[in-house]
Amino acid sequence: MTIIRLKYVHKFPGRNGKTRYYLRKPGHKQAKLPDPSSPDFYAEYLRLLNGDAPKIEVQKSKTIEGSLLDLIVQWKTSHKYKTIKQSTKQVYDRLLNRIAAMDCAQGAVKHMAPQNIRFIMRQYEEAGPTTANRILSILSMMLDYAIDIGWRDDNPAVGIKRLQIKSKGLHSWSDAEIEKYQSHWPTGTKQRLAFALLLYTGQRRSDVVRMRPDDVSSGSIKVTQQKTGAKLDIPIHPKLQAELNAWQDVGAGTFLATEYGKPFSVNGFYNNFSEWCQEAGLPKGCSPHGLRKAAARLLAEAGCTTHQIASITGHKTLSEVERYTRAVEQKRLAQEAMIKIE
Image (cartoon, rainbow, N blue to C red; front, side):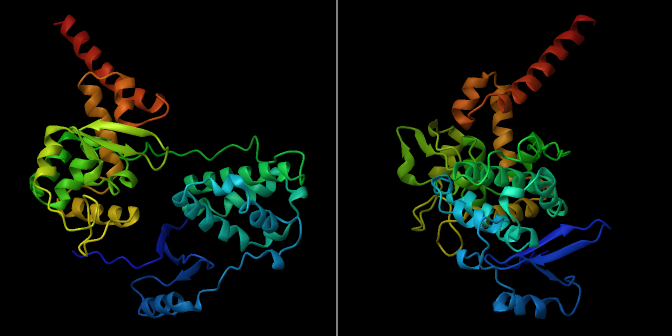
């Protein structure tokens, strides 16, 4: 079945179990859409897409001095904001645009209390605890800045508990899922090359889509991680080398290219990879990041130490890596224990 994705359309589970659909166009207020099964859906979608979605204008001339909206404008001129990576800025800006549209955005920053911050977080609970927690982080950064510029003496976001995330995290690919994908997509296809770059470098999709032939030297591939800035030199696994040998240059400059011969965007690659997994018959939840987790697991099973694994994955802290080594060690010790009672 062909999956058609409409630009800027997002869906969220409602409290009554019914899925809700919204158009979230950058620089515009979030607008609710009819259910896709409704005959009015596409007409409303096109109306909003073509300029009828209400715009959000975050302009200093329209703000109350000392308000939360004013703080948003001020913070966006700060050194801290300017040092944030562009991809992260885009996420922050989408969330800040929604805050700017709230009535509470005209309230004075000096009067903000923890309950005001919790109120803003509650407006995002429908989108999930991760989003609400991200809002808390953004507000905390802005309120630290408010202290720096003399608007406050304290940060009311400090001490607010983050919402509990019940999820166990993104699914890590099993050996069976790895084999199933490889069986469906043969060597020489970009689907197989994408898989190999993810699994045999252990990198995030934001780094994989930027990998270029010029990054390969002396049997290694050089990576500067977009998220952390870490510089890595990763030996090329023989199975990855086989895929690189079969790679056909289409002039994109990167190993992975769209059907139009252009480099993938990070989100565009994610959408395509999800479809490739679906076509291979894999369950929902098999994602690019799941292959990064699988890479760490395979390294742990091969007997690598936490530091050795981190030298490939680029993890800054060892706590995440230790999850994989502990799991492998538990399995080994359990097997040895059972042998002793035979």
